Image (cartoon, rainbow, N blue to C red; front, side, top):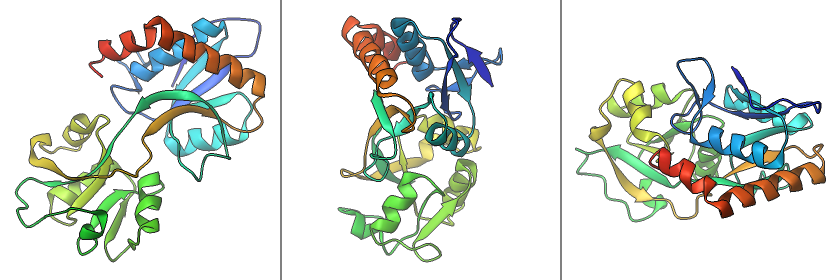
Length: 237
């Protein structure tokens, strides 16, 4: 689904992100909407550049941004492995990772990630959280469960098929509710301090440095003017 941001002679830049309300989603009119969508629109307006915003599956957007010039992800977690694979425009938001479990699990006591290794931790296949757990000594089919969708992951937790979920607080309540469960039924057991938390606008290496600089300056400008914070406040972020 696409939303035209402005018109110009120049070929529009493309910005992509997956469905994740209230940050980026398709509204009832079939248009891209959300807090980070509005931030991208403000950046484009500040930079006087045309752009198209596409809400599509993460894997598709990731592949496009990595291989196609002037295609951007606007909600990409900046990780060490991705650092040199992309050019980074700037931070759009911060998320914080936690290990969540059901509230009635009085047996779960965690003071470190290692304490979770006798348990089964779930996350989404392909996400950085999956690589993070593998790199920290978790193994699929032993103490690591990888789901294709968040709906399946939450079903695994609420049906006691797994013990914990590694996730962040971005749209957490809505995500659990959309999966058909009670968001009041979970509680954080451990905050993950060394998990990357910067969400960024990023593009592949074929996009020019000048374009990245132009957008980076525009993002800095809307932060300085108060427009950025005003958008976040509008969405209670």
